Length: 282
Image 1: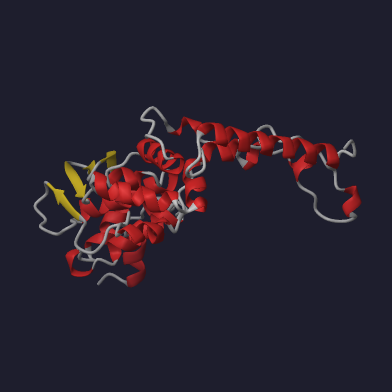
Image 2: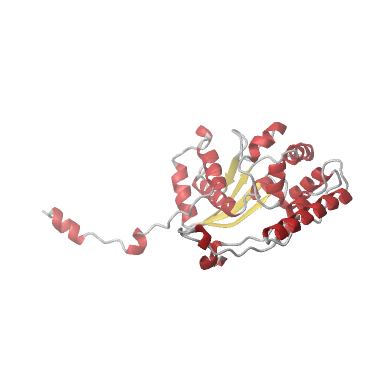
């Protein structure tokens, strides 16, 4: 009879590589919200398949994820086979998007954030005034996979859901794209709604402000750990473009481009006066 100690000694050992799990990336609000939407859909989305799908996504099994109006498509590659998966969400028609853009344009905070390339976390609260929601509502979301599992979603479909949630971390504008409006077109229509003019179809996200990462900031000139505040090293610089946000918002409602330039010129003069005053040369 084999002893417990002997069985433990002769049992095959798992290597470090098989024991190690890929750490889950830090999730943004958008990623967590999509995951909650998936996991809260009740009987339509049987929970036992979700953990398997989450594991597949973390293992990198989801390949070629593509977002287009109404669909997220991808292929889930396993050791011996692969499966094509499509997630489907209804798109908004042009009238619905027009109503949504109008309520967004009426919220200055939302308009400024969107035109600077940032998606407000409470955007659905505002879109709700037009009867819309970027995130899926109960019964809207469905999936199709060419495996034999009849679950909706199967574990492969769940993997694509989690991969899409990860993609939202870097680009939450994938949500309006899934609902039928690319980020570029949405911003063009928002500018037009703010200015009262036609949408500029040539507008794109290249006009978004440049991002600066923390690694590019010189710590010695940026941070101060305490002590006498008079000893804090100051390196003031005049603003490069103080009217940039105003110009990005476009002409005020009922105003013309000439009116917008008058306002921008006034802001620039005020900024120049503030700079002179700060330097004691006013």
